[in-house]
Image (cartoon, rainbow, N blue to C red; front, side, top):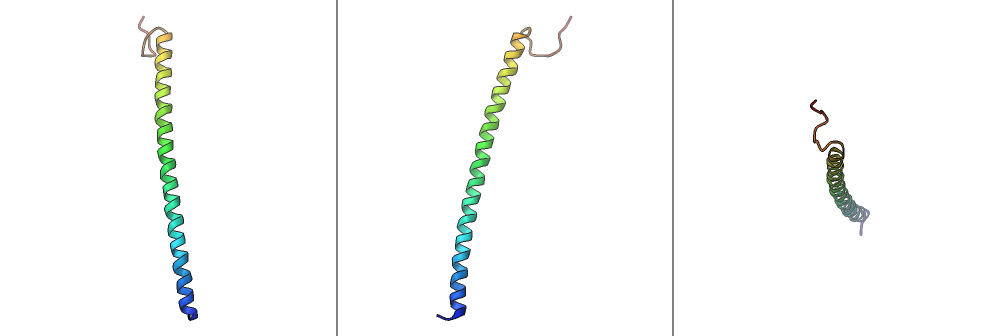
Length: 68
C-alpha cells in the first residue's frame, strides 16, 4: 500500500478507538449519575425519618414553634 493509504487506515483505526473510549466514558458518567441520584434519594429519606423522629421525641409536634 501507499503511504497515504497506510495513513488513512491508521487514522480510521484511531477514530474507531476514540469512539469506543468516548462511548465507554459516557456510559460511566451515566452510571455514576444514576448512582448519585439513588444515594441522594436514600439520604433525603433518612433525613426525613430523622426529622420526624426528632419531632416526636421533642413534644410530638411537627413544627418548631410551640403555642403557649
